[in-house]
Amino acid sequence: MTQLRQLRAVYTGGVAAWSFCLLLGMVTGDGSARQTVLLLALLAAFLVLLLWSTWCLWEAGTGTRRPADRARGAGGGYADRP
Image 1 (cartoon, rainbow, N blue to C red):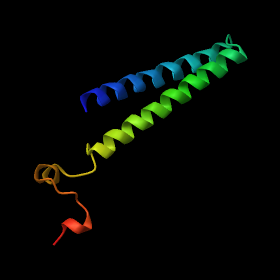
Image 2 (image 1 turned 180 degrees about the vertical axis):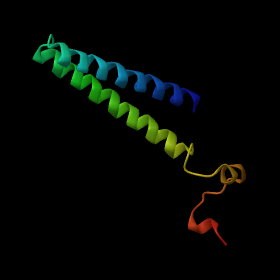
Image 3 (image 1 turned 180 degrees about the horizontal axis):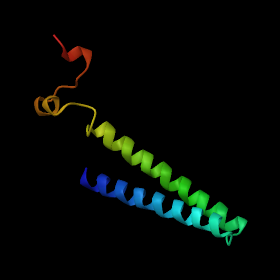
Image 4 (image 1 turned 120 degrees about the vertical axis):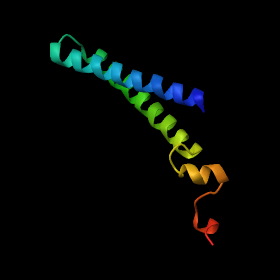
């Protein structure tokens, strides 16, 4: 779980870095079409990985259940209710 959180932090940093580079290239006008396409591809890849890691953490239970439910192991579904 800790490694997944660290990966999500890396992906978040990658998204920020590629976004900054893309915006900088657009503002200064120095970037070629090839550079822009490459930066867009890198940004898209890091966004997909960021969404995947966030989804994995969500599915692992870091926000889907209340802390009290996690402590007693309840799923929080309708079948668990009396």
